[in-house]
Length: 155
Image (cartoon, rainbow, N blue to C red):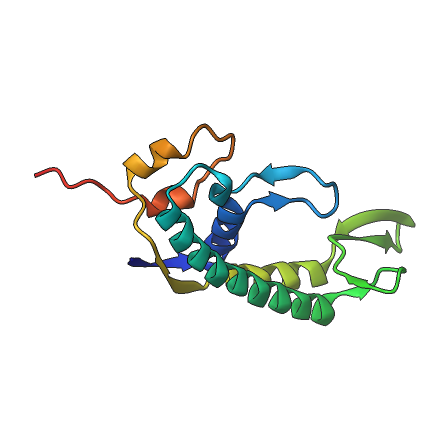
């Protein structure tokens, strides 16, 4: 096992790359998930353990994001809260109404950005290039997962 520091934003991305991700709003599949590829049983086991850690971190981040929505959000008219990106603002002199960026959204985005840039240490299994050959042909883009690949020593 290896250890490295990752930003929480990368942790969320890695969790999607490993487990797969389907948009809850549209049902569109963004990631099939690396665990669903043709991998050795040992690597699947080790990645399953990593998946559990990543899923717990995702849940923590989602809970903190929800706290920020409660802090900065407003009633969405459907019994929930949301932080609108734009609000209507009326210029009193010209009597013209236009959309402007919501100051509460900027505060939300700044705080959430700080959270996503926070680094934590993650322990993960070594993945070799040879093991990737077994994974088959996937359409997924594993931007964060590829950073876990063990570099070959060239003596």
